[in-house]
Length: 111
Length: 121
Figure 1 (spheres, each protein chain N blue to C red):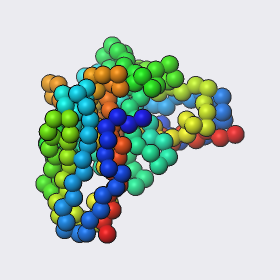
Figure 2: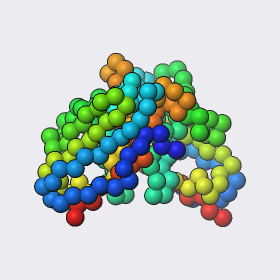
Figure 3: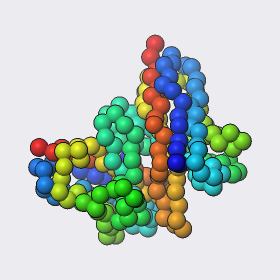
């Protein structure tokens, strides 16, 4: 079962900015870094953001991450149709839900 | 290129067992933890556990402890996930991924392509 809470869905029109939240606790997000993954339909997840706010090479700068306390956020600026996917946050968990906790996932729709 | 390649899709009957493989290439296999994740149909990702190939140290998620076995053969750069006494509820996509680290900062990258397991009578 997922330990980190995300909204089940988010939507926007092309060019808009959307924000996806990820709520955790003192054993995970508050004390460990957060990573974000994008999963296009029928494919494996792919790293989007690591260490709270770092983008791997090849990831456009319209994707950004941030964290405050036990909550993290992923912002997609300039939404594009190809951004329709599922997005998951994740963090190491030092508590009973370890070793690694994933978010519940957010389905992004571009309308 | 750093890559993880998983074994192919499996169709099993209830009660049977199976072992999924995940072969790493393009990096020093013994330097990074490998994690296994389950994704049930239409659901999110769940970490089942992680293993370090250098010494086979394994950490299981409490939800999967005793239900699955994670192992590794470092001589062939391959990690394994074993499921026994399969049930219909084990039907899922299973992914392996490399756990990258920078000090205390961790993330999974890259991921294997996934292995679909279908359990049906």
